[in-house]
Image (cartoon, rainbow, N blue to C red; front, side, top):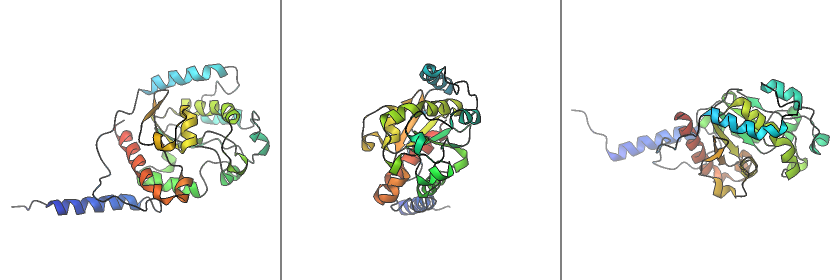
Length: 254
């Protein structure tokens, strides 16, 4: 007769599984909670169907219907129509316009704040140390970088990596909305308070936004720490791990 595993054996097996998953995070995870499975209670439904989101986004974009980029059908067409933008002061100081990168049909879209120095040089979002960390974070919950779509609130780097100014966000955010309308993601992961508050038009701390699922035009939104913040504050890595597990559960329920 087969022997029933003891609670101790099950706990040990569970802890090994969690540590294996956390190891995929590389240097992201410095704390692994004991006896905590990756798959937990089912998350709430990921939100309304994409058709609803598309309609709401089109309503937001209607005010820009006379802009040449408004009729763009693909990301490539959109980029070609906006990559010389000079609508804010950042157009004068940037090295390269940082449009976005990834799967044009992604179910998950990752949105950061603005390009940094490495991104400004290369013209691609999240390619520096924070980008390397983001790749590991995604891999930890079984996403490849090329499976998701990555963009920023701003397409141009603010000098000295300062926070975006309201008029800069106002000038640039319609381009992000158009990207979202083309990609049609079902989940958006905002990296950092500035990305979350600007997309959702909220005035909340990151602590109050984390752990919740918000709505942007019918698309579910999770807000977590920016990878650059995790590099500065390793104690926040466990919280980021929990947020990413939540996102993965939602994705699996789509």
